[in-house]
Amino acid sequence: MKMKVPPALIMLVFGGLMYVLDRFLPFGEFEFFGKQELAMFLSGLGVLVMLISVVQFFSMKTTVDPLNPQKTRKLVTNGIYKFTRNPMYLGMLLFLLAFGLKLGNAFNTLLAAGFVSYMNRFQIKPEEEALSDMFGKEYSVYCKLTRRWF
Image (cartoon, rainbow, N blue to C red):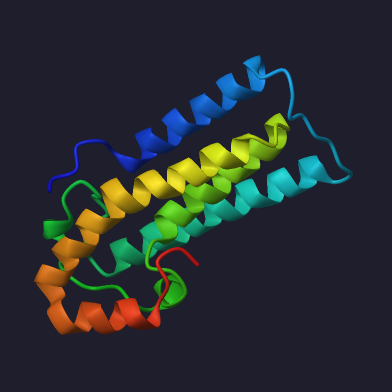
């Protein structure tokens, strides 16, 4: 299965849905001490995780194009990829969680969960199939040692 929608666009769509939900849902608002600081921390962490993962791909001279996993030249399993198989998507999730905190509507966590579900089904599974075809047992061992998200 070939991906047709860039993951960054999917993140923006879910972010837009979070904004609409916050704007028009008359309940579910919350506030707590340090909420803005936590949102800033998660946002920064999300950006950092995405940057580290992209730099690591470039340093290994392999593709960062999620729409064409068959262009992958090397299986990256060290650095941040020892802890998560999908740090770019994890970074996007952290960014969405930060945005949800900033908006302050508890129901946005459902949309963040929807992002995870969508990415698992329509982006990660096809990527995993392609990588499994390309790297076989090496990828299978990596999947057993490293979690998909965190």
